[in-house]
Image (tube, rainbow, N blue to C red; front, side, top):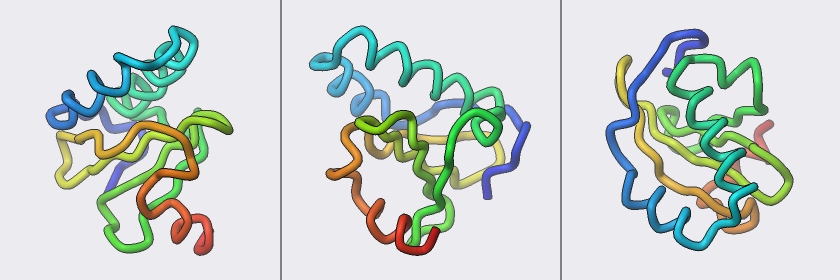
Length: 101
Protein backbone atom coordinates (compact mmCIF):
# COMPACT_ATOMS: atom_id res chain seq x y z
CA UNK A 1 0.00 0.00 0.00
CA UNK A 2 1.15 3.53 -0.76
CA UNK A 3 2.41 5.26 2.37
CA UNK A 4 1.92 8.97 2.75
CA UNK A 5 5.18 10.89 3.02
CA UNK A 6 7.45 7.99 2.00
CA UNK A 7 9.71 8.65 -1.02
CA UNK A 8 9.64 6.11 -3.86
CA UNK A 9 11.37 5.67 -7.24
CA UNK A 10 9.85 5.48 -10.70
CA UNK A 11 11.06 2.15 -12.08
CA UNK A 12 8.50 1.20 -14.73
CA UNK A 13 6.32 2.86 -17.31
CA UNK A 14 8.85 5.16 -18.94
CA UNK A 15 7.68 3.99 -22.37
CA UNK A 16 4.13 5.07 -21.47
CA UNK A 17 5.45 8.42 -20.29
CA UNK A 18 7.47 8.97 -23.47
CA UNK A 19 4.56 7.98 -25.72
CA UNK A 20 2.16 10.31 -23.93
CA UNK A 21 4.66 13.20 -23.81
CA UNK A 22 5.25 13.00 -27.57
CA UNK A 23 1.71 14.28 -28.21
CA UNK A 24 1.13 16.38 -25.11
CA UNK A 25 1.14 20.16 -24.84
CA UNK A 26 3.79 21.74 -22.63
CA UNK A 27 1.16 22.81 -20.07
CA UNK A 28 0.00 19.17 -19.78
CA UNK A 29 3.57 17.96 -19.36
CA UNK A 30 4.21 20.51 -16.62
CA UNK A 31 1.25 19.42 -14.49
CA UNK A 32 1.98 15.72 -15.04
CA UNK A 33 5.64 16.07 -14.09
CA UNK A 34 4.59 17.97 -10.96
CA UNK A 35 2.27 15.06 -10.04
CA UNK A 36 5.02 12.50 -10.69
CA UNK A 37 7.38 14.41 -8.41
CA UNK A 38 4.65 14.41 -5.74
CA UNK A 39 4.44 10.61 -6.02
CA UNK A 40 8.23 10.22 -5.78
CA UNK A 41 8.60 12.50 -2.75
CA UNK A 42 5.56 11.07 -0.96
CA UNK A 43 3.45 14.24 -0.94
CA UNK A 44 0.90 13.14 -3.56
CA UNK A 45 -1.85 12.65 -0.94
CA UNK A 46 -1.44 16.22 0.24
CA UNK A 47 -1.56 17.74 -3.23
CA UNK A 48 -4.05 15.65 -5.27
CA UNK A 49 -7.20 13.61 -5.06
CA UNK A 50 -6.19 9.94 -5.07
CA UNK A 51 -8.43 6.96 -5.77
CA UNK A 52 -7.49 3.34 -5.20
CA UNK A 53 -8.26 0.93 -8.02
CA UNK A 54 -11.33 -1.17 -7.22
CA UNK A 55 -9.73 -4.40 -8.45
CA UNK A 56 -6.04 -4.04 -7.56
CA UNK A 57 -5.22 -2.39 -4.24
CA UNK A 58 -1.65 -1.59 -5.35
CA UNK A 59 -2.90 0.62 -8.22
CA UNK A 60 -3.91 4.24 -7.72
CA UNK A 61 -5.33 7.10 -9.77
CA UNK A 62 -4.05 10.66 -9.39
CA UNK A 63 -6.72 13.10 -10.54
CA UNK A 64 -4.42 15.81 -11.84
CA UNK A 65 -7.04 18.01 -13.46
CA UNK A 66 -10.41 17.56 -15.17
CA UNK A 67 -8.83 16.32 -18.42
CA UNK A 68 -5.81 14.40 -17.11
CA UNK A 69 -5.29 11.38 -14.87
CA UNK A 70 -2.25 9.34 -13.93
CA UNK A 71 -2.62 5.68 -12.96
CA UNK A 72 0.31 4.05 -11.26
CA UNK A 73 1.18 0.79 -9.58
CA UNK A 74 2.82 0.67 -6.19
CA UNK A 75 3.63 -2.97 -5.56
CA UNK A 76 6.38 -2.62 -2.97
CA UNK A 77 7.65 -0.08 -0.50
CA UNK A 78 10.28 1.51 -2.71
CA UNK A 79 9.15 1.62 -6.36
CA UNK A 80 6.24 2.60 -8.54
CA UNK A 81 5.38 2.28 -12.20
CA UNK A 82 3.22 4.29 -14.58
CA UNK A 83 0.27 2.34 -15.97
CA UNK A 84 -1.72 5.07 -17.73
CA UNK A 85 -1.55 8.77 -18.54
CA UNK A 86 -4.40 10.45 -20.36
CA UNK A 87 -8.00 11.61 -20.24
CA UNK A 88 -10.28 10.50 -17.43
CA UNK A 89 -12.83 8.88 -19.72
CA UNK A 90 -10.22 6.43 -21.07
CA UNK A 91 -8.53 5.52 -17.77
CA UNK A 92 -8.82 1.75 -17.22
CA UNK A 93 -10.78 1.06 -14.04
CA UNK A 94 -11.43 4.67 -13.08
CA UNK A 95 -15.20 4.28 -13.46
CA UNK A 96 -15.23 1.50 -10.84
CA UNK A 97 -12.97 3.47 -8.50
CA UNK A 98 -15.25 6.51 -8.76
CA UNK A 99 -18.27 4.34 -7.96
CA UNK A 100 -16.61 3.20 -4.73
CA UNK A 101 -15.39 6.66 -3.71
